[in-house]
Length: 113
Length: 114
Image (cartoon, rainbow over all chains, first blue to last red; front, side, top):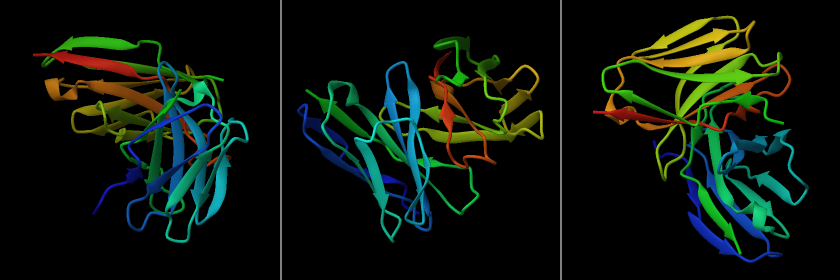
């Protein structure tokens, strides 16, 4: 079974721009979660989608948004980029409605200059 | 709000000895806990989990202990191997309220010396 894939792997953007990151979960998985990882902060939960619906949301500003498609692929969008948005963005998928075990992708490294 | 804390940013142990990684949490609603291992340039890999109805869970060389009264969990690796060198994250969820919304600690970098 193919793992979780994320594209692109690396991205450089300028302050004020917007960015869209993509995540393809493991085949058959319906839950996709997004996390932001910054040095010293660990992983911070952004949001989780299950069957195209946002089921959980973290404490991030409205500039961070996401969506999930009928094939479970998910996208995350960040508008009006700030320097502090530079981070590794990870997505994780899990199978079933009540499955805790999350499988992470390799992440997208976003650098905002 | 750092609801899950890993107060040791790094740990160094000798191969063959025990590695003990610690994690504290503040939210008494947390009832499910996981440990992940992360190598550089890769996403975290699930290691082991424990629910609040248990105080211990074992999987091979990995054992997780949960002390609910102290809001503390620990991961024991016995015996430690050089391949265990990685960053370890603990994570917690209040499953009844926010299923799959996990709070992660900042990680502990384990170095197992040959």
